[in-house]
Length: 171
Image 1 (spheres, helix red, strand yellow):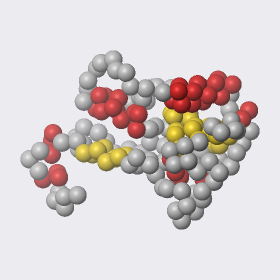
Image 2: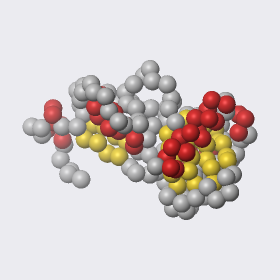
Image 3: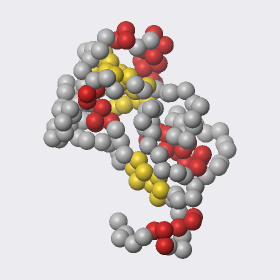
């Protein structure tokens, strides 16, 4: 990464810098509360870093009250660039304050047998081999790896989780 100060560049006013991770911590890394579990997923494995640096256009902020994913990046960029258009993206802009939370697909590619969905603060997971379903609360349980009863979520949320999983599993 260049070691010079981008703000001094002649391109600074017209340059947006985006730094995005494709995953958070890998399983079995030595992180308190993030030990590998039977699903291979915890809150610490799915918190993916994203930084958008565009001085004069977007203020620094941390979004912690909603779940977002890489599928939300394209709608966010359209929003930042003030481009109003209909688009085929299933994601939503990170800048939208009024949008209701949506169901984000989570695919565990390493073992290939787990798929899930997040609608903050719940994390729904299903094991594809035996159909075992699991629900976690991302704030109440350190690491988010312990199950809570499925009935903790509303019927609407359970239906939304299952529909998201089915839509992305069949894709």
